[in-house]
Length: 158
Length: 199
Image (cartoon, rainbow over all chains, first blue to last red; front, top):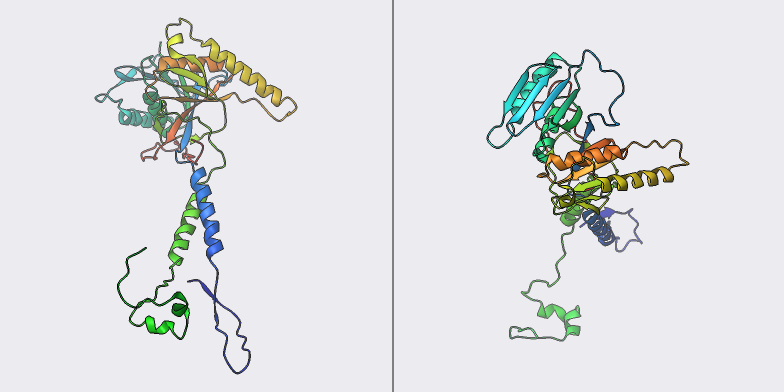
């Protein structure tokens, strides 16, 4: 049990007062219990975050003229997989699906190559088809951000 | 009454007596035992510290629903307070209130969802009215989209378009914060600000 020493103060030659004093921990336990109950009730167990995206032609788009050093990268999400187009009129790089899932690892590798060549590149445009699920879109955006392309614009595939 | 072993059963006042009580306690263990509270206090303290470190005063930003299962992303940033558009299989809602049924708009030819846009315009007007005397306040047009992971982009794009038409062009996808994996490109991948936020 918690104890604390108190200054020695005898009353005379007879009995000596005990040096140990017991601290009353009951109010402390009460306080801790209340804190614990309050914090458990107000605790947030789901960690929610956000992925910021822009819209092609939307108000959030910068009106500044495009930098000629920045490539226009378009990533199409279709039923078959990804199609990566680098630059206007550039060649298409197909990344087919891996079974039922999109091949995020292959996409990450391709984006890493681009990022190594163009370190200032921060923008990418994602064009998704109508039947693409939100989860796949989010995973794709997340992969782009992971690879340093955090200026993600989402638009509908033509 | 409890069953007791046969033997001497002294009166309680004898048991309390220092002189008489001792006779009856021979060979018996004392009935009182001190509780060891130190370990319990330690455990309570640790729990309180852990919960305090995870405490968030931001409150619940999203209206969590059983119909919406959020996807997981590992590179998201901290969610901020903004109007929330919820998209389920059945309906589209704004700030916890149903706006329109998905079936109702599924066969529309136009991209815009008129009911959602009207509600968002009202919300924007309200916000501008509230902050009309606050010159420092700039309308950022932030909006959080909380959609089920199986929602098709066909619906998402229409919601995004409606938000943009109403002036909410700063769109955030609400996701569950996942673990950050390795293999990010050099000079990229901002650290996830997965601070506990509402949910």
